[in-house]
Image (cartoon, rainbow over all chains, first blue to last red; front, side, top):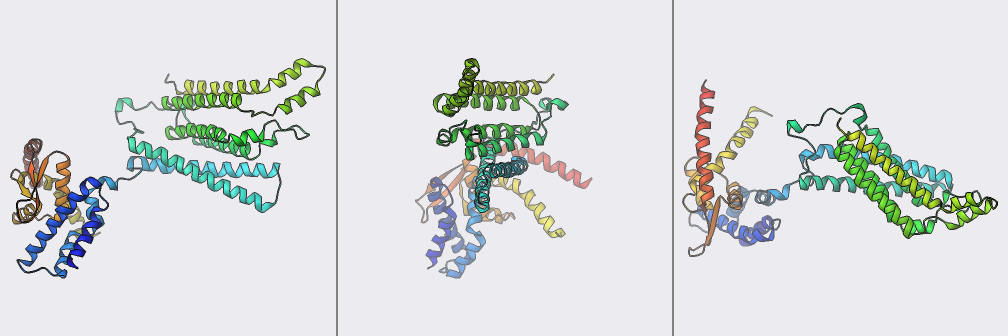
Amino acid sequence: MENDLMERYIYAVTRRLGPKQRQDVAQELRGLIEDMLSERCAGAKPTERDLRVVLTELGPPGELARKYDPAGDRALIGPPYFGLYKRVLETVLVCMAVGMTLAHGILALLEPGTWYLLVGRWLSGLAAGLVGAFAFVTALFAFFSWRGVALEQYNFDDLPPVPKKRQTAPVWESMAGIGFCVVFLVIFLGCPQIFAMPDGTPLLSAAAIRGTWPVPVLLAALGIGRETVKLLERRYSRRVFLAALLADGLSAALMIWWLEAFPVFNPAFFEKIAGLFPEDPGFSSFFVKFPMFFLAVFLFALALDVLDAFLRSREV
Amino acid sequence: MDAQDLVSGLVSELRRGTLILLVLSRLRQERYGYELVKELTDRGIPMDANTLYPLLRRLEGQGLLESTWRTDEPKPRKYYRLTALGGEVLSRATEYWRRFSRQVDQCLEG
């Protein structure tokens, strides 16, 4: 019984330790407890009560295990990052909630249906969005904390100059950006058929879009990531520029590939348009090339965005 | 929080760093954990085994101590000894401690 309690105690301490030191610590603790018992009993046979006194002196097993392995106690997101993590998390969650609600409100107006189904769709979208945003921000900060990414400048000479007015990145700007990504994603995936001719011929192929859903999700995630970096910096900086360059570059590549490889646009839509203007082949051929035109506008917008980030982040 | 709580908090802060110095100084000669607990207690510096044992392991991990299991005794025991690095750290830290404690004393008296 006595030994049983001792072994149970030792097991409770060592089971939390790494496999390499488990055996060694167990053997050392066994020796220690026996030494403490023989000191206490001075030659007499220790009773269970003695063992309990000795173990009480050693303290709760969990506490002892933590002393052996302080690294095991380290937080996923440590003190220098935690305050900022909380602020960014709050902001991103608010954007996600507002964006989702707005998007589902628009969807409900476009496609009226039974109210409880609409509410159900809104709630499930809200839950998925909030969980996703939470995971995204947490993973980002866990990475910062793990790698010790410097979010603050400690060297006086490297302290950034006070941003000029054009260099400040107000929170509302990032919030609007994140909200827009959410609205775009929900409407795009939830109701791609809203972009349609009056007779209902859709501009986009709902099947192709839903079949390649990770692409719009990734596009929205890139946008949210880029805005999150801006939220962290609160100003246009080199980092914001690099994040914009990376996110926009990836978005451009993704969009080109998506439009090339999948029939995202519905060809019937353009044939219908062309059919409306039989006497003007130039005008209808423009519409046949509409996907190219759309891509060009999209790429132009991205290029403008990168240029804007570059010019605003420049220290003049 | 009364004065007693504040004093014990302060005292444990003060002890934390000096205990490492004391442990290193006692391990110029090979010793096992409980032997060290008793030795320090006899010298009027009581230290709990549950603090000392994890500390020994941490110092060993930092390369300040090395250890060997002795199985030729009735009970197998892990003996710790100062390494060359541990010796260097000890002598530099001791030097600092002497100067620092003298200055602290002067400050407290003045």
